[in-house]
Image 1: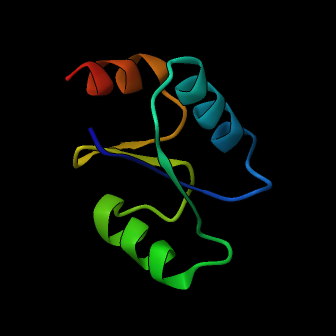
Image 2 (image 1 turned 120 degrees about the vertical axis):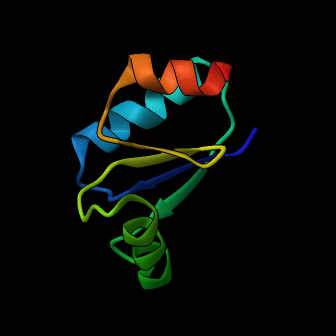
Length: 76
């Protein structure tokens, strides 16, 4: 499984997503789009959104902190 979280340090919902994934023992890559322009562009290309968090679970793009949807995506 491949999980990526596009986030910024000041985003409380980003922290909630990362904590949720940690509680579920789901490994994930974290990209700080406030400091990494390439990842920011990648996030916008994937999601069509400028806002964070954006979660990519095996190519399924989820925007915002939506734990039920994230859980469904990681269970496959």
